Image 1: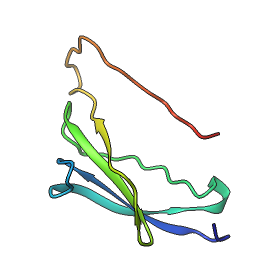
Image 2: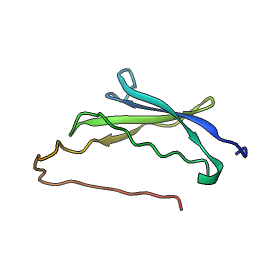
Image 3: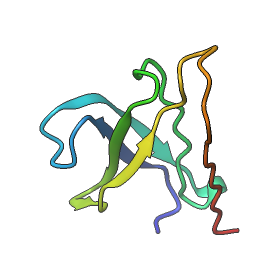
Length: 87
């Protein structure tokens, strides 16, 4: 990787084919963070499944799937949470 910041565009969509993109923005992957980006997406509908992907230069990542948290005050019979790190 170059010793400079790299623009990374992210997208969040309602569908796996990314035909209904609900949010998109560009963050910069920086050398001091091992060229990673940290995205905090706000304003999504609660308790709904979404899909996400990243673009850097001509490369597009495979799509990922996530689900937003339930509405504040809503009861949830169960909830799974995962954390992954390459460090």
